[in-house]
Structure formats: C-alpha cells, structure tokens
View 1: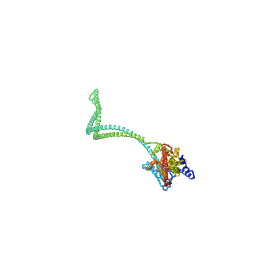
View 2: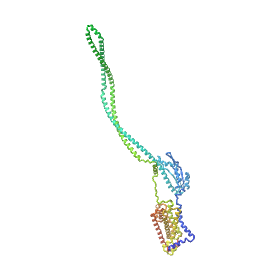
View 3: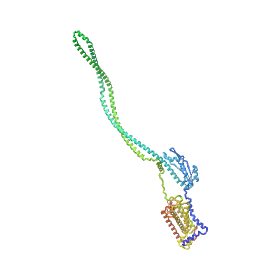
Length: 631
C-alpha cells in the first residue's frame, strides 16, 4: 500500500495546473511521432512509386521478320507507360532525358535503342546479338530510386527475354516439325531405296548367273574357234587343189558331154536314115526278088532294129542331156571351188581373228562376271544400309519433337522462361509499413520511456529520505511511468491499427505484448537513471541507438558487423521485434513465448537492479546533494 501511495503522489504532480497536464498529454502523444508518424510516412512507398517521374526514350525502328513487322521497343514503352507498379514514365527525347536526370527532373531514364527489335530477333539468324536497354541513374537525386529502378529493370529485362526466347523457341520448334516431316520423307525414300536395292541385288544375282553361263559359253566358243582355226589352217591349199581338180573334172565332163552329144546326133541321124530308107530298102528287096513274106520278115527285122536303135538313141539322148547337166554342174562346181579357193585364205584369217576375239571375249566375260559379283555384293550392302537407314530415320523421326500449334505455343513459352519461381509467402505482409511496424513501435515506446523520465523521478526522494523499503521505493518510481507507458502503447496501437489500417493477426496478443514492452522499457530506463543519475538519460539514448542497429528491424541482423551480431541476443529490442513480427502475422509459435519470457527477465532484472540502487541511495552523499551535471 505504501508503494501505491508513493506512486500516486508522483502522478498527482501532473494533475495540478495546466502545464503538467499538457506535459502529460505531450508525453502520451510523443510515441505517435516516432511510431505512427514514421509508419504513416513510409506506409506504402512502392505503391506511390508512379508519383516519381522517370524519362522514357523510345528510338526502336522495329524489324520485319517473315514478312511481319514488329516493334518490341514501342510495345515495351506502352507497357511501361501504362504500368501502375513502376515509375511515372514520361516519353520524351534523349536530350530532355539526359537534362532531366542531371537536374533532378527525372529520377532516372530508360532508353530503348534503335536496334532493339532487330537484336531481339537475331537469335533466329546466323548472327545473333544481345538486345540492350540503356538505363541512366543519378544517385545525387536519390540513391534508393536508382536501386529500385535496377530491380524494376531487372524484371523488365527478364520479361522481354522471356518473350524473345519464346518467339525463338517457337521458330525452333517449327523447324523441328519441318525436320520431323522431312525425316519421315527421307525414311520413306530410304525404304524405297532399300526396295530398289533388293530388286537390284536380285537382278544382279540373275545377271551374275547369266554372266557365269556367258563365261562358260565364251570359253567353249574360244576352244572351238581355236580348233576350227587349227583345222582350217590347210584349207587354203586344199581348196586350191580342189579348185584345180574340179576344173579338170569340168573339162573332162565337157568332153564326155560332147561325145555323148555326138553319139546322140549319130544315133538320131541313123534312126532318121533308117526310117527314111525303109521304102528304098523294101524296093531293093523286091528288086532282089524277095517275096512279100520274105520282105515282110526282113522289114520286120529292119523295123525292130530301127526301133532298138531309136530306143538306144533315146537313151543316149537322155544320157547326153545328163552329161550336159553334169558338165554344166562340174563347171559351176569348178567356179565355186575357184571362189572357195580364193576366199579360203580370208576365211581362215577371219576364223583366226574370231578365235583371238573369242579369247578376248572370254577374258571380258570373266571380268564381267567378277564385276557383277562385286556389284551384287555392293548392292547387298546398299540394301542392308538402306534398310538400316530407313529404320534409323523412322526411329529418329519419332524422337524429333513435332508438337501441334497449341502444344508448340505452350512449349515455346516454357522454353523462353524455363524456370518459374513459385513463392510460398507464409504470413505475407501487405506493404512496407506493415513490415516495418515491429521496428518502429518499440522505437517509439523506448523514446516514450526516456521522455517520461524527463518528467518523472526514477526514485522518490521522499521515500529515500524516509528510508522506505528499497523494493517499495523502486516500484513506486516505476509504476507511474509503467502506467503512462502502457497508455502510450495502447494509444499507439489504436492509432496504427485504426488510423493507418495495420492488419494484426493476433490483436489480443499484440496489445498485451506491447503493454509488456512499455512496462519493461520504462523499467530499463528507470534502471539507467537510478544507477547513474543524470548521465543515465544519455545511456538510455545510447542503448536505443545500439538496439536500433542490432535488432534486425530493417536488414537481417546476420548481415550486421560482428560486434552487432554479438550484441543482438543480449538486448531486449531484438526480442520485441521478433515477437511483434509473429503477432502481426498471426502465426503464434514458440518465438513469441520465448521473447515474452526474455522480456520479463529483462524487466525483472531491471527492477532488481533499481531496487539495489534504491537501497544504496538511502545513504546520502555530497555528490548527490550537489551533482556535477544536471539535465
């Protein structure tokens, strides 16, 4: 009860008069200047980025590819100009952009060069070139604007590269489709070639058989002609003799034919004479005194003789005709033998040449047979190779991508941007201010605690003079600041939540932990003042500075220098920042419990040290009565 009376006495100092009340109101409002005002100023800077002017220079001439005109630079410029997530782009000239970046009219400039489209299309040609975007920044205008611009342009470059890569991949896939079709045609042609090679092999086999038969026949022909050549070597001389003999025979036949003709003539004449003289003979017989019967007998014999002679004449005439034919034939034979004798040397020479030619023909037939055998072997290999080629081409064609238009479009898009980052943002915060609230809120409460103890006394002089118990004295000096600090925390969270729209996942836990933070911070600031007096206020500010750079409120604390990484787990604000992040996100977890326990330990420890300081200060000294420095 004595502690409460002492605390009440300290608070009543602010209820008398207007200035103490105004001072108390100012102290309550002070954390809002650090917490709510800072958060308000930096609540959503990226969302207001289009208010920052930037120059856009589009010099792209475009390019015509496959009969189609495109201007990627102009399209990119329109996209940027209509974008609400980047800078406030103004399309202008190169001179105006350079002047504006130099004098601060523009935070940066983006120039799309004249060959931008042609370079984007170059990967499908034999001379690929990398497209380029020219960015000019001026850190004298604003360093972060340039940094943000580099990130924006990195995303722009990736998007443009993805589109260009998709177009190139689509052209490449079209080529693959054409290659697949051509490969199938080549496979079909190879199959036809293989079929023709099979037929060629079969034909060459038959030809080889015929060539073998031909070689055998030419061998026999050559042997026969050589035998004929040998046999006819004496033919010219024999035909000469035959011609001479047949000439003699023809001459003899002519003589015999002449004799036959003479005999035929004589017999014919005799028959004619006998016939013509019959009457005269009969008269002479009469004259000789023969009787008619005797004459008849004689004449009968005469007639028979004439008849026999006529028959003989007829026979001789036939034989004479035959002899004439024989003589004529013998003459013809003699003439033919003479011609044969004349032609026999040429005939023998021709047979000899034919025998020589037959030898050459036999040799050629052998070479032909050997060549056909080699050709058949080659045709067999050709057929085998053609079958293999057709099989491999068919198999290869099946492995060549040949997507349809829809699949090709999706594939080209994937190839142009093969890696998609699927970000799973657990407990994602909506804006910059929400992310920095865990940093600015404890900063505001610490500053509020420091300012509180500019108005409040850390230890009641009356209690010290009355030698009140040290714990009561410490608690009496802390409770007024704790109550006002808790009000500061409640007011701060109310303004941030309802005024700025901070979304809090765990509002009850957030309020409780922020009140606990205010209680612990006031205990720590009280400890500095109780232990060190007036210099304690400076120590409180130094502690604030050290905590601001080591708590990890902006960049991860692991990125700070080694000495700050060492101090990070030793200071209370580190745990406050961690816990507030989880409370705003609403994920709960052990970090909140651990941070609460550590913060309670800091608060209890600070009150313990303050109690010890109060115990020691019950003894007055000259330095306390007349301090060297008073703030």
